[in-house]
Length: 384
Image 1 (tube, rainbow, N blue to C red):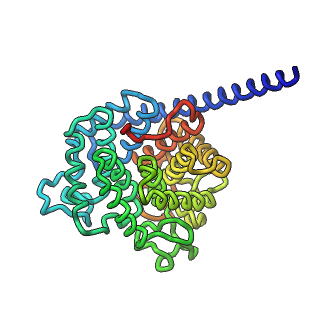
Image 2: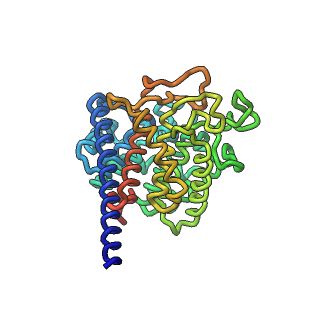
Image 3: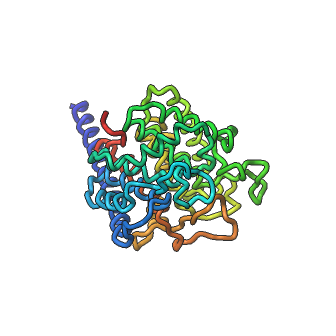
């Protein structure tokens, strides 16, 4: 009888724990929808396909996959149609380039014009139509045929373009996209990877000791490293595990996760320079959200230990929910466009950006899965 009672009590405790997890997940879904509804009702989809807007749509598609909310899907569909399923629009390949000035439409091979293709492919996987992926294939077929390897010469580019390469592989079955991703990532690593820490300098201009923080330390920009870590998570999510360089990307991701974990602030956030919190102390949401997303993804997919990283993710979410998320359902404390910590320019709740909102949404989606992994799938890879 005693054994039966113990088993009944254990079952009750397990059921209560599952109910608690479900309740937490539902709460996060409510917060997510409040942010999404507010943002989409106040911001027209009639925006260009430049990186800051396009990044939001990568997050919006993750929110759609989690919730199945048609309103989210329609918002990205209308944006894609508005942009004619293109990034930079120059037609003549003889004029295509990937250097400064960056925003011009002849900069077709510049990664900030290519992040939109991730969403177009995601939309294609939901409702196939060749028009949705024609420009992405045209651009990347041309780019992968070139001899250059220096397309990704700044850290942000890895989020903008690496997950595109795995999506193109899954779309076409051509391994050249994975091979070129590895080749181009090698260039990035030579230029800005710090082997001692496993973190990334933003670009060649910030490599230590040529560039130092105001306190003489290394400059590891929070959002820049957030872009890289989130990119690695999104790549591993769609890369076949038997690909010859899968272990390389996984190792990079894990080493980076431990380095980031060590640099979290007590209240859950990461400062603008994660290696020198005193250079620009205080909240910063975009980097914090990207780290949260990437580490929660790692736990959800069995790559990171929940024991080691669960407290980090939970602490970060407390900041994202209780500080970054404002009472009016906007996301605050986001460093504006930049490439390093900005001493003398404190960030407040009034600092809000479209890409920062996207970063928060990514974190909310993956943290919801963390809270209820049985209900929500963890992979975004399309069925083969």
